[in-house]
Amino acid sequence: MAYRLGLIGEHISSSLSPVLFSWAFQQTGTSGSYTLFDFPRRLTRSFLLRAKVDWDGLNVTAPHKDLAFLLCEEVSGTASTVRAVNTLIRTQGKLIGYNTDVAGFRYALEQRLESVSRADRVLILGTGGAARACLLAVSQVAAPLEIALASRRPADALDRVADVLPAPYSPTLLTLTKARQRLPEFDLVVQATPIGGVAHAGYPLEPPFAFKPGALVYDLIYSPRKSLFLETASSFGAQTENGLVMLLAQAAESFQLWTGQAFPLELAVRELLPELRKS
Image 1 (cartoon, rainbow, N blue to C red):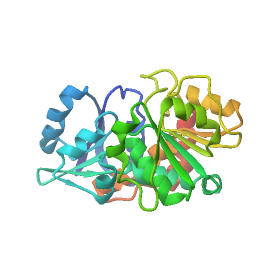
Image 2: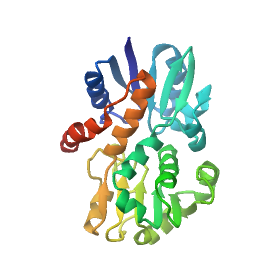
Image 3: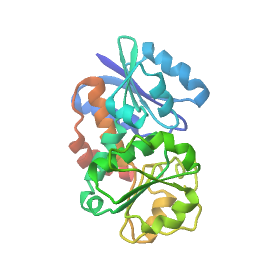
């Protein structure tokens, strides 16, 4: 069987997903193709509904994860918790939705477990599908005293994030201005918005801002490899990590869901990740 797979999103020409899955096809002896579908919001609904016929599986990225969740006939437990779908399977004409971002970011956190386990205060910038996945992953790996989320409109975000965290956690909702003021308090910072990527240049917070020395700062963006946000974090003595490890780990989960075959993740981290970092 030749699997027909792809990625749907906006401004995704710099995506590394075709490289990852081509590598996975070769390593596992699987036949398939992986295509990028760059669609604006107004065309996404019709494309995803047509995907019931035309494609075996799709990844979904910003800004379409919430819509994908709404269009699925069935969703996994994790996707239901974060109310976002980033992986679709076509089964007997139905769209089944999964969220592999949670497992992907959990794996990334586990690679920095010594720092993560010491994090008393965590800040996540954004409240979209990727941010909510990171929110759940943090609660599964760490035991911070506070988990805060920053949003342009915190009151509007409350419904989206209220049920993501398990008890006894309740997220602190901050405005972007308040997050900027409190940034030096946080031991773990996760930048989960598209701001700073090649299609959305700039900073997710209004500069100038400062970081806690020694803090661990993630930016889910990987193009450019080091965003302006991460460059600033480095200048304050923070540890930094982009989204490449998460990308590999969530892709591994998607690949297994689609094909039933294990993605060689540890091999990818050893051999493929260094090449991606240099590209």
